Length: 162
Image (cartoon, rainbow, N blue to C red; front, side, top):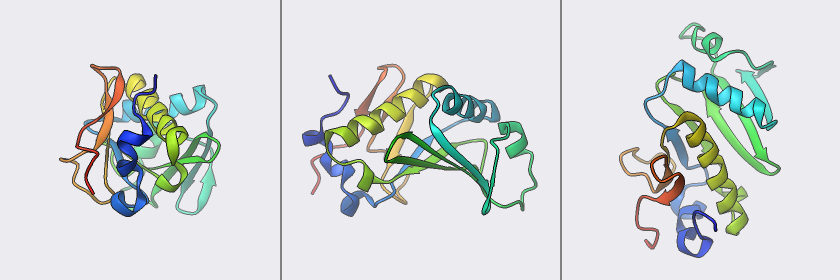
């Protein structure tokens, strides 16, 4: 049984309502949590690309990424947990893992399942909640997320808004 059903959450996957790139985040993280994410990406054999600015590089340790000077170019990790599904992580702070997904890639029940799978894998590995808000929205008002105590992705807001 899927965590969420398309017919019940399709508004949360509507780019016109949520923005094409909603914000997904794991609050209260550390360099060790980022390293756990890097290890997860490699253990699952997800396709990935790491760049600093426009330069593609091998994936360093999280400690190396966050030891770079404050004025260094932005470090970005792109992962494809499934073909056609991209998550973009920008390593701005060790205190929060945040990333974007493209809702245009996540349509129908297969898209819902792909997002739920990604959020659950990250949340389980970290033992932390993973939440999604509308693009540019306040983190105080997530619409859905992985809840570790329930071991599943749940809605955190009313999906029936118009």
